[in-house]
Image (cartoon, rainbow, N blue to C red):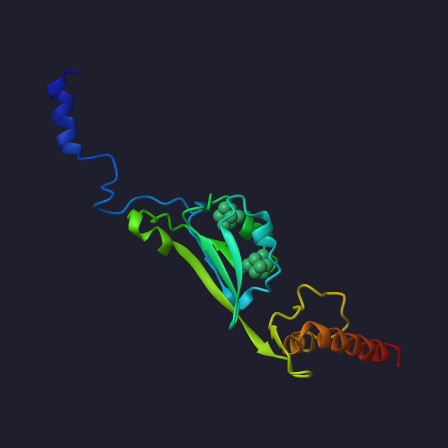
Length: 174
Ligand code: SF4
Ligand code: SF4
């Protein structure tokens, strides 16, 4: 085909590529993009920090509790943190719009606070991340009862959990 024919055909049919960055482009549904963090689900087990391939995740102790920090610039988008998080607190989004100016590199973070609370029994400060029903299926207590353990510090929680199991077992035997 002659050059002029190809030119004419292309002029008539229009561009066959996406107009990005001046318009939308295709994003595959399974794309692993920016990681999103939900502090309300996090139990600070730190499994994500252990498996992170890019060493992008960090936990800091702050007066208000524990602060989660994920550096997008260091993240390799491997998805391991989301895969291993037992609480579903981390998810891979399809957002890949992470281009930024060098001066903004320290702003490219995903962060969240897991607040500390006062124990309902002894009054000491602790990070309020009690076991959930999902993590403790062996307890013979209702999910609400297990969830109520959230009000206690780890020390008092052990006592309360033992009482819960004892009460449930006694109910079963009776
Ligand atoms: S985000 Fe998930 S894996 Fe990471 S500390 Fe929280 S609960 Fe654990
Ligand atoms: S996607 Fe991979 S590199 Fe990125 S924060 Fe999660 S574990 Fe780390």
